Image 1: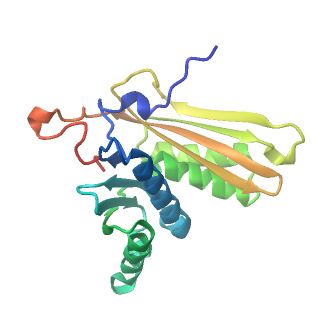
Image 2: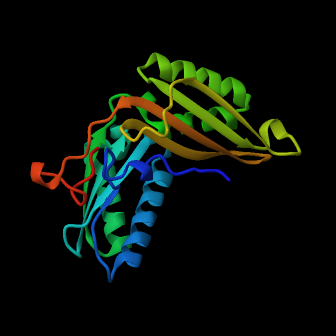
Length: 225
């Protein structure tokens, strides 16, 4: 029997922050549904923007604060800020709450597991063999400062009748070391043979611990971006 756990959930409160920062016993189902719909809308509407994370805070019941980490902030902001204003109006109409949006640019997209997974998916969707796509991405990521990476592709690879799984790895990926800064990302490549699942584990070195309440942070503080 496998002993597996989510690499992000395994480190929550130690060196990882929650992507949603709020607490409400009565409205938890409503807030969870809203958070999911907000993330789906942003990722669907800005597929080319390289959105790696959407952090959500709820200071009050009628206010939502978003922090969007993206590799291409100009796509979301738009000319003269028009696009981000449209997004704000759309989210306010969907949720019925006031929405404030902040954008943070990602310095090195090659060290974000979610964006790496999407890059692999894009190549597979454009008929690149999965093994070759993984090899090219691994070489690029390792040359950009990663200490280790593992990529796994599952599905009807190459249009085969029977689904299979291929995996490639470089460097170190210490999944059981809690202090390790492991970033994890998953996406699906939509091919004419069906979806191909892509998982990426990225080791970026030893992470800094989450600040304790005494040092000005805490489990319910704003997520670190």
